[in-house]
Structure formats: C-alpha cells, structure tokens
Amino acid sequence: MIYSQKQFSVSKSELEKLRNALESAESRTSDRLWLKQAEIDALRSQMAEIDAEISEYELLTSGQIPLSKVYALEELPRVLVQARIASGMSQTDLAEKLGTKPQQIQRYEATEYMSASLARLIEIARVLGVKFSGTFEGTRETGGSVFVWRTADEIIWSQLPYKEMIKRKWFVVPRNADPLEKVKEYFLHAAGPKFVTAYHRKKVRSGNVPNEYALLAWQARVLERARDLATHGEIAEFEVDDHWLPELVRLTKRKDGARRASRFLARKGIWLIIERHLPGSYLDGASMLDDADRPVIGLTLRYDRLDNFWFVLFHELGHVFLHLFNGLRFDFFDDESASDSDSVEAEADKFALDALIPETLWEQCLSRFALSEESVKIDAENLGIEPSIIAGRIRKELNNYTILNELVGQGRVRGQFEKVADALD
Image (tube, rainbow, N blue to C red; front, side):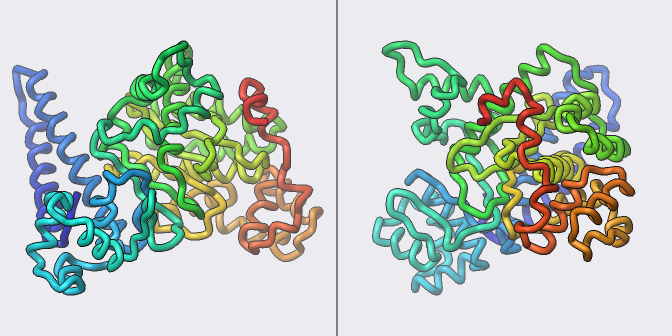
C-alpha cells in the first residue's frame, strides 16, 4: 500500500522503469523463448501490482472513494491508513493532531500499528473519524468503496455467508464436517486465491455500505458458473472493439431480448451470468475478468424490470471496454440506484446512455417534455428500441419514479432466464 505522496511519486517512477524494461524484453530476440516469456510475465505482474496501488491511492486522495466498511479487528491498521488518506491528511498532519512526531506515524503505519497501544489506536480512530465496536465503518455513508485483501490467508472464512450459500446448494457439507473448512474449499475452487489480491481489488458503487464478504461469495459463485459454461460450451475470443453494440441494442425490441443478449454476448467473448444477490450486498451488476482474462458480467435481477436490466448490462459493458483492460485491476460491483458517482462510474454511465440512445438522438426525443406513454412509444419506434429504455431514462433524469410505470417492463426479465427463474423468485 502507498502511504504518502513521496511513496506515490516513487511508485510512479518505478512503474515507468518497469514499462521500459518490458518494452526492452519484448523486443529482444532470444533462443530461449520460455525464459523470455517468464521475464515478461514477471515484469507484467510487478507492473499490475504497482498500478493497482497507484490507482487506489489516487482514488482515495481524490475524495471519490472513501474507506470501506470492514468486519475484522485485523483490518483496523489498513482502515486507519485509508481513513487518513481519504481525509486528505499527510502523516505529518496526523502527527500534529496527535502531538507527536511524523516519524512516529511513519513507524506506526510501516509496522501496521503493531507498536501502538490500544489507547493510542482509539485516539487515532477518533481523530480520523473512524467509529468501531465489533465492526469498523467509515465516517459517512458512501457512494463507493474499495475492498482488497493482500492474500487469501487474510480472509476470515466465518465472515462468508456460508449458511446462505449452503441453503442455496452452492456446496454440500457432509455430516460431521466443518462448514468453515467446506466454505474455504468451495471458495478456493470456485474463484481461486488470486481474486483476493492486488490483482483483483473490489471497487463498489453503492448507496449503502455493503458487506464485502457477501460480495466476495457472490463473485465466487459467478466465476464458478462462468467456468462451467466455458467447460461445456464455446465462447469466442474477446476483442476490445465495441462496433457491435448497435446490434445488441436492437435486441431490446425482442420479447426475449434479455435471454438473446446472453447468447449474443457469448459470441462476442463475454459471459453473462444471472445470479441472485446475497443479503447485505445491495448489488445489481458486476464486471470482472476470470482466471483466463475473459470478461464476465454478473447480474442479480434484483429489480425485475427491463429498463434496469438493459441499463445495468450496458453500464457493465462500459466497465469492460473502458476499465477492465486498462491496468487498474479492479473488479467492479454496482448498485444502479446509487446517486453518487466517481469519475470511473460516470464514464460507465455515459457509455451506457450513449450506447442505448446517442445524445444527439436523445435531444430530439419529444417524450422528454411530453412525459406521456404515447410520446415514449413513438420515440421508441423511431429509435428502434424498447420503450422501457426511454421511460427508465426519463424517470432517472427527473428523479421521479412515479411516472410511466406501465412502460418500464415490470416483471418481464426473470422469466426469460428459465433455468434461474425459480431461484430468483
């Protein structure tokens, strides 16, 4: 983790050196191709880890991403560092508020507060506005959070919602077996340890502070199902080329457009997985890369409405095309009802809106002013899209969810996914 602006500058310099070394390694001829590839992979691995740390520091210092909510005492040191950075304090600033020397704060953070007394920890938490009892949480409700574990060993397996996971038959616990051992075994099989490292930081957009262990368990299930599909079915090679999006938009007019979208995306190299959210996750959709670096989009269908389905799907596609392959190494989790957005989420929102209805065409829609069902249907026919997309956008822009209720496609999504319909109801 980066603790200061000085470390941030050093990390950026180190990243540039690694980029130069990678370019040199890739251009160098060698008779031992396996050795060359090993060097390239090692350099890319180092770059990804530093890039992720730089991204987290930039998001924290920008004020766009406050600290996450955590559920374990072991996480307190990291929470205190995150709280300091997110509040805009340097180590010197914090030292002044505590009446101590900056070097003491540096030692505290470098040793993960191992040398700090309980009284000192309480004092630092008070100064930083971090409240804790059995759990810790940020100073305010958040529009976004970042969760990360350094290794799978840091996971507290008892925090995973294993009772609900067993109830949903994600895994079976034999008689006299330890359920915590089984949930650990399930997670490591379904997701793998790499999904709780710097390679897969969890960036959450939510109007509520989510339970990160619920998100982690849900992600494991989505990845497991994506891997099963990859084993039993074919998927095309993904290319970062969105020229086919208008073809996907045209599917919105089909009665079974949502189900067709799943098959269509598989032909473009993207898995679409429908999996009901877990309690405490406040989740509509997510985008991530699997262990083969294929894009995976997970949707919960928390709201059984066409307008929600199509907007969330295109929002996650925005993350796929704009963010998943740019080195940030984030898995993105989204609550579509969240009102606050940082720049990353704003980019994904704009991508979704422009893909579904280009801005120049949206400005010509009379339904934006007429606000009648008839005008929405006329505009939808002219644009060649489902009326629910226009109705949903009008409701969202006006922040008025009492209008156009008959056009948002209520109850028209879950039934299209026959294999999961029972689980979702």
